[in-house]
Image (cartoon, rainbow, N blue to C red):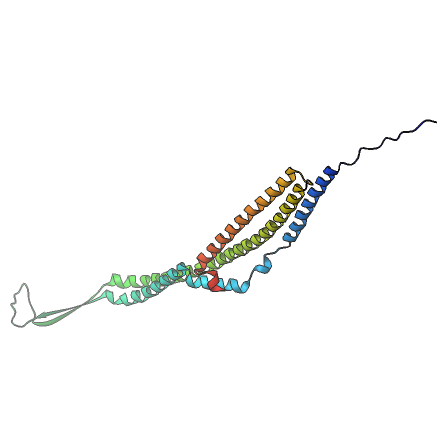
Length: 241
């Protein structure tokens, strides 16, 4: 009876298994944290009462609002000025000639006071149109002011939403950056123990570096959104809150 030899498979390569487990855990942790971040919502960050304060403040302090009010005032004064100009059509002259003056047949001269009254018919006929134009200019000034108010309200809403969005994105990106730091610490620990190769450790470092850059970009976007909102409001947000 012959001896039977059984052919066995080569032993499992544990270093490759450890590398696979490390990469898998890295991806799972990143995926899990991304799901947590995805639960962030900016809707609960929007304050309607604060937005109303911003709109009211902008309508009060934004320079174009004051400019439009000046135009309305000037148009209203122009109506009064046009109404008073009715008297421009009438002219009264007074001449005085003392007694004892020389007279002749060609140039007779009366002694005493002479009063002359003149009416400019063309001026009288033109006045109703001038008054109507002044009133129309007044109405146009009020409509321009109303349009400006509507534009300001929409602009404040858009800039406020952009500010809230930038704030939420910065908070989300900061959380991801913190998670990236923990991933790098774990990768460094395993690399120093020989459980991870240099390529895996390098990928973790790049992941952390990219997230740090995104945090800086998010901070810049938030500052820009805040400055844009404060520009149209005319006051610092801290003074309104």
